Length: 423
Ligand SMILES: [Ca+2]
Ligand SMILES: [Ca+2]
Image 1 (cartoon, rainbow, N blue to C red):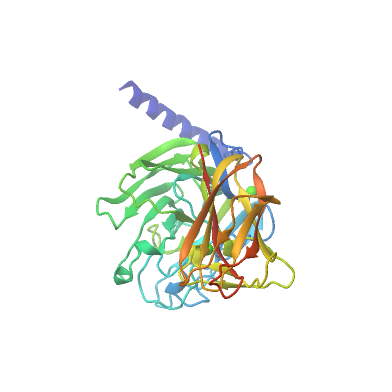
Image 2: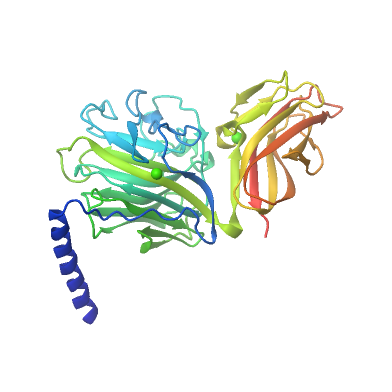
């Protein structure tokens, strides 16, 4: 009983403080940004949105493009005071041409026609994955929309096409974590969906003690094999069982919707969802980062060219290096998130015209040469262990050392570089 009374008192105090501060509008109650270093965790990807251009090596700017025409799903955004502002205005086209009033402005770190598999397929959207991760801590600092018709969302889907079989593409197939769906200025939903396992389909909501459109707050989700936890301003708010969730990497959306979802049919324009930063972490002893070759900066030796192919590769692409003699090379810049020992796994596509390649990292040779020859095209992996003395961008160079006697050429096929922490 005591607790209840205390809670009621706190509410009363909060209410009186709120009305007081409303009069003194100069005082904001922004939750300050967290330090980017998170003890026990390793930063695997982030965007502080402090510049004036969008990092398109991380973000796709068209929302679920396979569902609608190309001019209807494009994100409207701007940069302001070190944040990105997603915006929906009276001029934003409705997402569908059908008369559905929904408008959207969204960024996401992958796209493919299997996401949210449903509806009519309008376009052959190329599958691309710029960032996805299994487990970890995903955090944004943001200010939500004042509009009461729609909602903003910080959410994740898997980018693994294998769990979206063709046969079920036309059913609403989601593997999804909604860190939040924020609506009506102080309400949220924290959801977990897994259609592959009928036991999971949780919608959980609540009310914040603040108006999310007034100030910046920190919203975060921790995902482990056992649970997902929702944190607001670094305080645990909700926890759900995730032990039956399909353990596939997930990519990230930052989305603003205007429709009637929030229960109000009159949008307030412009609706704005302002994000100060996006950060993703993995537990320090569980770092497992896959960097797709097709997304990495690449330098080729003189006279060598490359082609980007898809063919069902990881992340939607692989790089065919058209090397034709020994000592030709392809050098990828990939990030090592923290110092220490890692399995360095090269994902490659074998073929009848492949050469052998020696990996060096920042000029230091590691392991033996990889024979990429195969009588048929197959995705394979080559693995070595490397001890990194420091974190940061490193140059992963594959130098042609020769070719298998059966091979017709010296080409290379690189799909990804994956780093798995060795403990
Ligand atoms: Ca920022
Ligand atoms: Ca790839």
